[in-house]
Length: 493
Image (cartoon, rainbow, N blue to C red; front, side, top):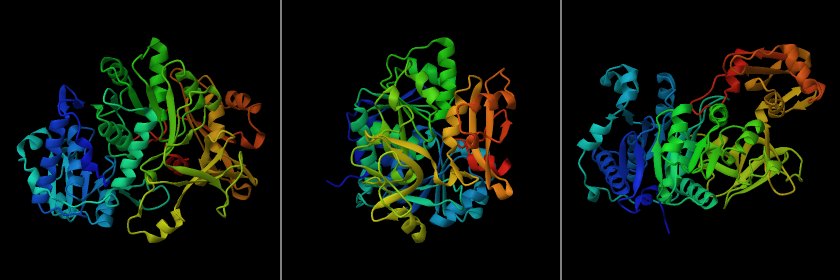
């Protein structure tokens, strides 16, 4: 059976699909509004295969716009809300974007007249949306009649561009739906579940895990525009949330509040962490709060590859087993599979693997080899098949000819009771190659000296792994999902 994203709303009409602020929206209203957006776009001249950009905070309008674009047969490009106009211009040029949907709150922050935005970005249409816009457009589902296929590209997500210009990852209906299906099976998602959505919707983790999977299962979304620890904790209890997804930095902040006030969350069945490595100290702390399933994925895999649902203390630090329908293996530089325990590159095969990179055939050929996606991540597998991410291949530090994996050093630093956050990178030091440098954020009202930290690490790490340079700072730069930006740290440091 051919399935596309627009098929997912055929649920119990009166069941609540989304809760946003004080408003409850049932599945019938959701379907009606998605259809209205799709027809409106088609009447404006948007056709199958066109690329439509979407800039919108977490809100019902994001959901209507996203699925409205795909219902019209076009391809949606969710935009990172932290991008500059110059960065937006590059993406619009690369994808030949002629239509931009933007929420009124975002548009007002640009503070540039509409006609100047259209001229500057060579657009044909700028659509400013909000609740009033949604109510104003007419409903006429009969005007759709767009033939779509599961292998059609429905979404293009641009990578962060840490190693050059951003690449447009082309994802199909099948890529996204297969990933959502696997998550539903893995977490036994059903109509009674309530998801708290605080991750940015424009990010693949936020979209597939907190929008697509729950809507496909007929569950309810509780939408928050931003992450605020106190508000999240209130929502978890007041809304009786059953599944919460966040990045490690969110769990670090939540842990602090939860432990301080000795809070309990009896309704939560699963916490999900991904986007970066979850510090093992935080994983241990949450064993007494609610179970966290640490996952691993990439934009190129729509996004989930593995999830650790074991809740086994002996498996802390693992990202678990491949999700249903996905295969993984660890290979050497020649693509040969490596045995248990040996570190190599993680490669992935499955229905969730992208179609390729937009306008970049060479990059696509380099990433996709004989059906396997080469992730660029270093990993190992244990005797039970559990995957452990060691580090990004590009983040590997080579000091005096010896390999140092930053995550290993970070895990030990996190064991220090006064450390709030940290990041470890390699910095060039001439003939020695790289040396290990640590950036450390102490906990509030705590002071750590370099001597104290070196004494703490001395018996826990081999001498060549101990940071030669330690810099204490008030904060670490992060992207919109809360992931620490090591490249930015390295450039500054």
